[in-house]
Image (cartoon, rainbow, N blue to C red; front, side, top):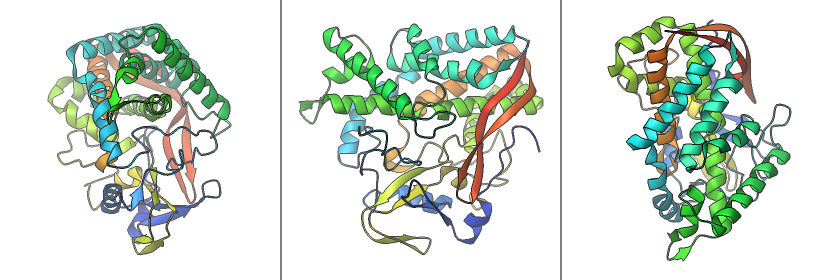
Length: 385
């Protein structure tokens, strides 16, 4: 088994029943495992809602550590669409050439820096720094702010020994409150200033609504991007011919990025709450009970993907659901894809090979399933061209 390989723990249950049950802080969850059922449930927002108590649709639940509703993530239509249309133009900025030039400069400098070292622990010395620096572009704040983001670690709500760390959550909330106060006194061209001046359904956004957008932006693309970047580095270290192929065939980069996102599925699943009695895969689902849409299982569904447990860099048909599906597809997907595009471009330009030294896997435990999502640590050496 290669260091970067991620096995599919859901295969047996997906084939046999299409679902499984887990306990989440005494609030049971039915995991939906098949691609068609995941997409069907994601689309059926009136039955499986995102608009419940703040934090309840996340798995593990964040009810115990936050009361702010993440917007538009925890809102159903029609309000969801109105919120989304307000913020979506901002989150499409990564398509602009100036944004991409700045992102490439950041990633190029990081690759140059680590290439001078004998080795690095890539989660913290590379992926966390890349994500934090890129976040300054998404927020349109000074580059120096990235050091604050780095100091929070790889997850804004979790720590190594606590899956729900209220102390870390409070540090984030205090930071956001301070930034809102600063923008009220001296508006700039950053995301918070934009939200303060925006109108929603004929009125100004409340501070709680603004805070909800900012919390989502910090939390939604944090560990997911870090996992994706680290897993990609590990894959290229394990498969040096893949790096060579990406250098020689730039035309396959788009397909390769979608395939790596499918295979590694940086977010295992996301929850919904049933608004009425219903069923999934023949299993009764009671009103007010929770389900999870298991993106990671759906992305390995053998009825949809040929050779699902292999990375096929030029996979032709790839309807993966790593960024969600339906109304609530990931707001930050454009930013995440640009990170991956530019990362691959810089690596093929500047790196001859990546050498694996050692690692400590990060494995999530969900009931009967143990799923590798990335690494607690992985030591790599970048060999420059």
